[in-house]
Image (cartoon, rainbow over all chains, first blue to last red; front, top):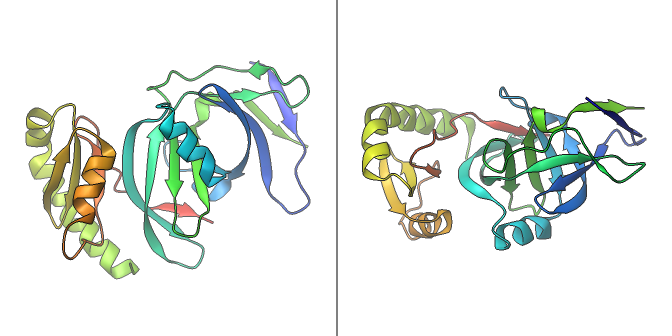
Length: 130
Length: 81
């Protein structure tokens, strides 16, 4: 399994490069979104979700409940998507590419405008932060 | 929605799903299902159609799960910090 590394930011946020469907994005890993199934969360711009959904790349949508740091509970939307890490040096895909319907990428839209995408851990290969 | 409401609604919906699971999977295969208030609220071919149907309800239930009929709904609370 190839290993790639990203530089941790001074603000404590972790950004990685991921191909979602046919496009590449820099996405923030939200550690609070790691769930019991090993899914990892990414924070993405609201427009990305709309683009992916409009392009038909998201499948198996779910509406579920999320709780934010203030304790507020709200509904969110998610869907499945193929994902693969992108090496930040070479910009080439690394590790396994998830099958479109075998890995999860959860897209969560919130009223605040902050949106999330999460992916099964097996998408990620070896993650490292320096 | 507060935690007490969430816990109460989730318990009702979880119990309902266990009772309706087989029926949902056989009668609504290939479609999306909205579960809330302890019952199936809407069924439609797409997620957006089901969500639109739920949004038309008066009042809109506070805890609604939408999922493909052949998949498990997500009862677990996801933490966004």
